Length: 250
Image 1 (cartoon, helix red, strand yellow):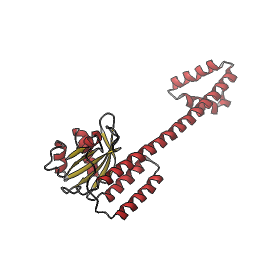
Image 2: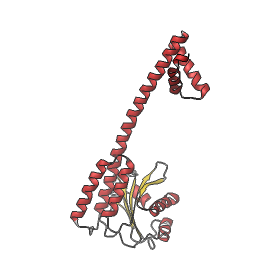
Image 3: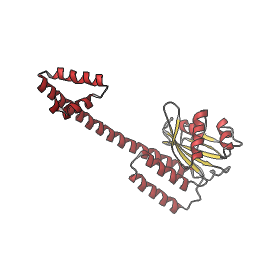
Image 4: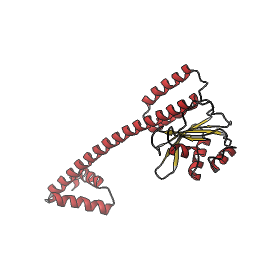
């Protein structure tokens, strides 16, 4: 097992032109992705193609409470393996997430390697013998946002995997996720602003109706709306919209 700042080693047996084509396709797909989930699915699919020996791939996100979540995996068993790490508080994803340097954690044979404690034995009993986890972002100071994980049922199956390739995939995943989430956050902020403006307009119209029909001031009209909202257990904007829509009945 290896954890930490070890330099990438190993070279893929995949022909270089095939790898370049895969990354070109991945880049195009990431540009077309509209959600974070789309990004992760495409990263996981590409990872299984360009990293030899990887039978299962998952992307694990680490919450501030220490819990692990696997939004994307190429098979249910990968999710189970990640959930075990969250349950036991140990495993390659946890180690890679907090390791310095490239953020690598790996084992060539989980039957004989006890570095991951009880998780390794449990994973071996589930049929997995080798694992490689890479932090998102590589080289970022830990803890990171999560890890890209590769699993195999064969001992030593990931020894020939190109660590450079795994690190580049992890960097792609982290960059794409950050960009997508930033876009979604901006879209959400705009939507919230539009909703706030719409709500202000609706409340203003309702106050105007009450001021006209009851001959009261602006502050008193707002208090009437607020009291109705509380007594009806209904949002203030909904009360205002209802009143405006039925102004002719007042």
